[in-house]
Image (cartoon, rainbow, N blue to C red; front, top):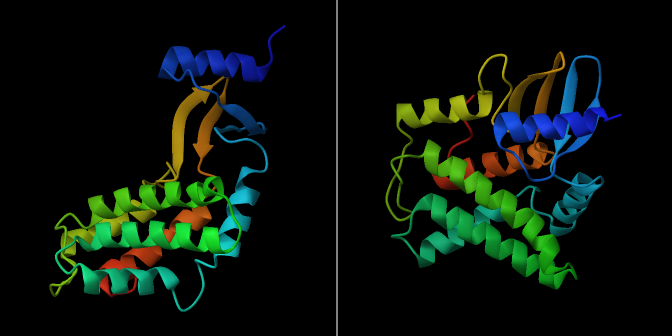
Length: 195
């Protein structure tokens, strides 16, 4: 007799071409929630971010980005944020006794946020030049964070129905990714995230 998880893995492989591991993190009568990550992963990410003190006020990522922009005024604002954020994570991780693997938990998220920011700030503003987001960039931000009605946001993937239940995967670090995304917007535009 096969389990729901066994049948689900077969379905993911045959219908979606997903051969790498996904575990069934939670199920109820309407939904099956998948995860690529082991149990306890999000707690580890959260603990690492807290120890690095990245999401505090005043925003250390914005300060690091501004310092980098003064040194490299011709650099893309988004690339400057990404590089400054990754450097700050690595520096603080080393200073606070965290491992390179701990730092990578966070820098991977920073890389993903930077990819979204590159898509949103498609004009690729340069650090040393005045910049105001274009109306299309404001709309792109709103689209990225709002998602599509009925389909969740950019942190949720919908695979479709399986045995009468919706199959979804939700990034376990989404709350941190949202905070990093807002930090990136503020640092790259000098304005609060659009409502």
